[in-house]
Image 1 (cartoon, rainbow, N blue to C red):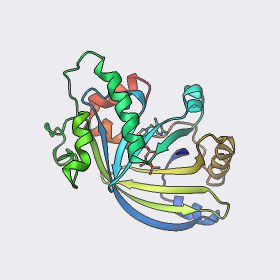
Image 2 (cartoon, rainbow, N blue to C red; image 1 turned 120 degrees about the vertical axis):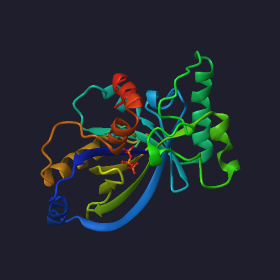
Image 3 (spheres, helix red, strand yellow; image 1 turned 135 degrees about the vertical axis):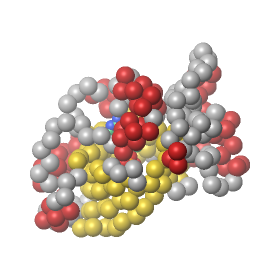
Image 4 (tube, rainbow, N blue to C red; image 1 turned 60 degrees about the vertical axis):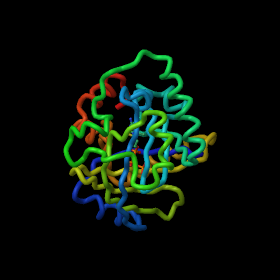
Length: 236
Ligand code: V4E
């Protein structure tokens, strides 16, 4: 498991030029589709737990203990544990969903329903494109796809190891950048935060406001009810 330390930033027209000026090198461009899953009552995301399938690879993200402790602080950076091992993901999600079995049933569905395509061609058409057996666990845990979007990503690396900048263009029209350092779980994240601050400074990123991620904008646009719940719970 690893910890993703990142700062998002608003992409302006000059960002690529500035990246090149400070010695960043384009290390590639790729396109991927993300499908995010949750229960109809948003049990995972209301606990800041994000389950997604990106091009067939599963990932679970949740805030580190330090991130939770610092919540409400002025930090522009976020720290999330990333789990990519499917059995570990399933264990954690099963544990979480068993808590939900003891809670009163919630009837509302919001957008987290693949039977009610509330946002036209964005609606998830089903849990997967591969074998149903691969996704039986989703059905068993009553998890459905609530967000589905494609990103074109250009990535930049620096000579100093470890820091990467991604420029993301989502297919629903939102563009966002992120400066990212991956730290092995359990290691101090302070050096990563410092590297990110330095990189932001070199790029002339002066804003002190939290920048919306793709998910914020996606939910705001296509699933306003889900978005409002996450805002009220101070998750987004
Ligand atoms: C963790 C999280 C979400 C899941 C998506 O995470 P994100 O890092 O935004 O994904 P992506 O595709 O941009 O990058 P990659 O995973 O390839 O590195 S959606 C919302 N969150 C929580 C969250 C938050 N509240 N604030 C910030 C600044 N980041 C994440």
